[in-house]
Length: 276
Image (cartoon, rainbow, N blue to C red; front, side, top):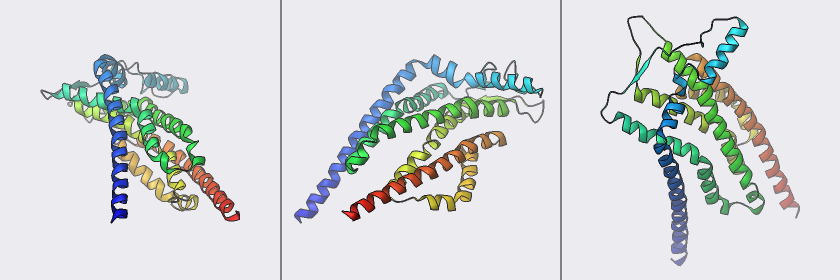
């Protein structure tokens, strides 16, 4: 009876520790969200509505590239042929809060990863704990690269394609505010999270749930899943889906090498323990 109670208390203590890690992470996200809420001119006029402007860096880059190649200058626009409108009484206020929370999460992501690592760190061996700084650093860098990739490549191409697409001159594009915000925020956030694939593979390989041979065997299945995932996180245009699929497939191949390295190190440790 005493042992059962002790195990129960140990489990409850773990829940209490997890709760405080979540509380600190939430506070960090809310703190950054408040800063973003206050600086709405930068968040909306510069960042969120940046891909709507013809002078956005991505459009300028592709415009110059198309000119140098002598092909149709589809990215050289004087004005985006659509307007964004709000149709709900509390639409702009709700959007302000929602975007601030998403921006707060993106900015607080390194700290959130730090809190996650602090929670799982006590269960790791001393030899594994020394890599904590590297895991936090690479997880943060991969997430940032994913966000930048989604924002500077996928988002503007999607906005340009869908915003200029027309089935008839009789139809005018008046894009709902929530529709535009959802597309921009979900693309950038989703690509940031997808770029965490190598980190996830690293931990799964560490605990023995994943092997490089399994990943190689199901490489074709991963390709199909990648196409489905790309279709989910991007608008329904082929160019965006291909652009998202390519880095995911590259990350998958990198993850196989990471998995192989981790499995190899685990086997070396097992052999070392057996020889003692």
